[in-house]
Each structure stands twice: as C-alpha cells, then as structure tokens.
Amino acid sequence: MSKMARDHGQRGIILIAVLLTVAIMAVMVVAATALTRSGIGSERLDQRRMATHFALRSGLEAAKGMILAAKPEDRLFFDGEPLTLDVGQGVLISASIRDAASFIDLNRSDPELIEALARRTKIDDPRVRGLAKRIARLREEATPEKDKAPAAAPAPGQAGQPVSPPSPNSALPGDQPPPPPVIFLAVEQIGELLNANAAPGQAFTANLTIFNPTGKINPMAADDDVLQAVPGLTKPDLEVIAEARLRREAKDDARLQQVLQRTKDHLSIAEPRAFVIELRLEEGPNLLAGSQSRAVVLLASGPLPFRTLAAGGE
Image (cartoon, rainbow, N blue to C red):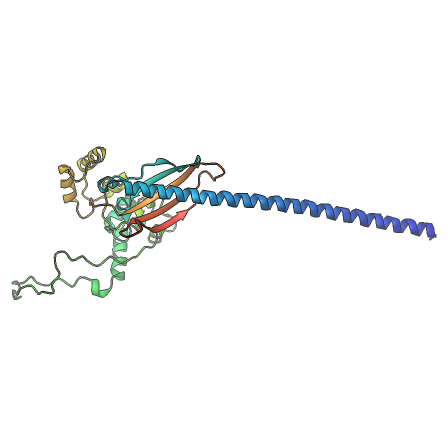
C-alpha cells in the first residue's frame, strides 16, 4: 500500500472518530437537557404538592374554627353536609364535618347493630349471618378476667342467701364500667371477619368508625342506613327523628325523647366531643385540584382546644 493510500485511510478513521465524538456529545447534551427539564418539573410538582398540603391544612383549621364557634346544641347536627370554605388567595375547599357519634363503632357499638348494617348494605357474603356473634366472641376473649362480670348469684333472701347491708366498698351508681377492649385498630379490619371474595364495600365501611366515644348513635347526625339498622326503630320513629332534625330541636322535643328512651341501648343525644372532618380542594392557583384529606379531632380541655386522633389523605 502506497503512502498516499495510508494517509487517506488514517484521515478516514479520524473523521469517523470525530463524527462519533460529536454524536456522543449531542446525545449527552440532549440527555442533560431532558434531566434538567425533568428536575425542574419535579421541583414544580413538589412545590404544588407542598402548597396543596398547606391549603388543606388551612381548610382543616377553618373547620375546627367552625366547630368551636358553634353552640354545643348545634354541634349535634353536624351530619357531614358539604360546605365551601374560602381560605384566601382564590383557594376554595369543600369541607364536611360529622359528629363521630353518628357512626357505628366497631369496638363499642352493639355487635347486632354492626351486623344489621352489613345486611342493609347487601354484602354478598354468607358469613354476614353470625357476624355479631363473632365480634362478641372476640370482645369476650380480649376482656381481662378481672373486668369480666362474675357469674350471677342467687338474690339476697332467696335460695338461703342472707340479707346483708351494702358494703361501703360496693360500686356506686355513678361508677362507670371498664372500657371495652380494642379489637379493631382500623375500619378495614372488619374484612377479616368476612369472606375474602366479598370485601366490605364503601356503603358498609363509610358508616363505621373506631372513634365513637360511647358507641351509641347520635340520630341527629347519623346516615339513613345507620338509623334503619337500629333494632326496634320503627318508621314512625324515623319520621320523628327527621322532623327533629328539620327543626333542629333535639333535647326539647318530647316525642324524640320518648324514642330515645325506648332505644337507649343504641341511641343517645350527648354533647359531641369527636368529629370527622373531610376536605377536598376544589380550586386554587398552582394547586392540585381534587386532592383530599381526612382527620378525626377531639375537643379537649386545656391550652389547645383540639387533639388530633387520626389524619390521612392528600
């Protein structure tokens, strides 16, 4: 091979190497540009998420303010009806406040009430029959021996039992029974007692909670499915409750008091202490519309008016 041919071959190789280098550098520039844009987009998204978080927190504080501003008798009627809150700078949040006593409590309410609600929501599961017994058995197994009621003994004066004066250490009428054992830590756990192929639906779990302070239902705020699941509650009773809610009169309604007396094992009207607050971001500049959050708060005595029992969403 002549010297000229070798020179042409070397020049060709150098040209190919230069072209490859330029191509690699072009790819690197494009990749760097894409990464930079992705980073900027991710940073902007993080900023929007953070702004959305604080917007929802503002809505939560506004809802707490509404609870504090309401009279105790008006808090009975917090039934989750949505209302729009303007928290400033064009941010609108839909908020619903509901008395936690309007839900059926998995740990405190009558197990028969839980089973009745499951049947009303038509869960396709043969294991719904007997659900109350399974819950009652779990509570019994979790109750410490010292808190279990002793076996019934013959009444004084009967079956040879002597009549004696009450002991000074006897329970007083104002004594409270021990709190029920905590079986469920989340509403979703109720599915463990049902068929795996028939998971509880929204219609069932939406009316369940673990934050009802007494387990009894506030009829002024409860959902229709909850009220219709209450044993012994008749159609005329439901009409009395509906009229009392419409007039926003609870404690002064004689007919309602009669209904409460007959169903005192399941219904009660007491000053609400725990509230479920659900929030949805409707609109706002540079925010993630449609974002939601949920919190359960407890009215407390002390320097801080509320304790947060649970929070989630966003």
